[in-house]
Length: 90
Image 1 (cartoon, helix red, strand yellow):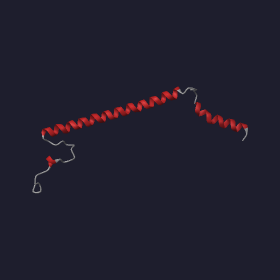
Image 2 (cartoon, one colour):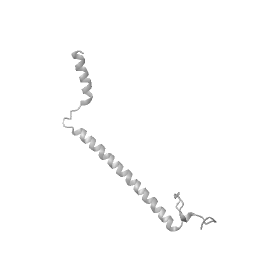
Image 3 (cartoon, helix red, strand yellow):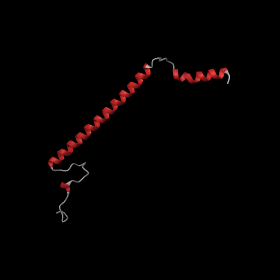
Image 4 (tube, one colour):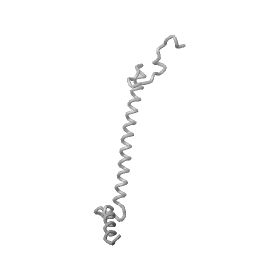
């Protein structure tokens, strides 16, 4: 390989790494990584908080429906109170 090809190949490989700015200590990359992680943690906190509130509201509806004697519309299981007495019950 001649000298010109070696120089141009090295220049083409190293050019995307510098991308128009010089960050010798890595502060830009560090701030970018920290902000991405912090943003994802905030998003997860928001999602899990909303899920928790939704489950608490659903549980409160079920408890209110159970105390009034009616079954909640979103109950999909039948408990011992929902069975009909028939000849098989002893």
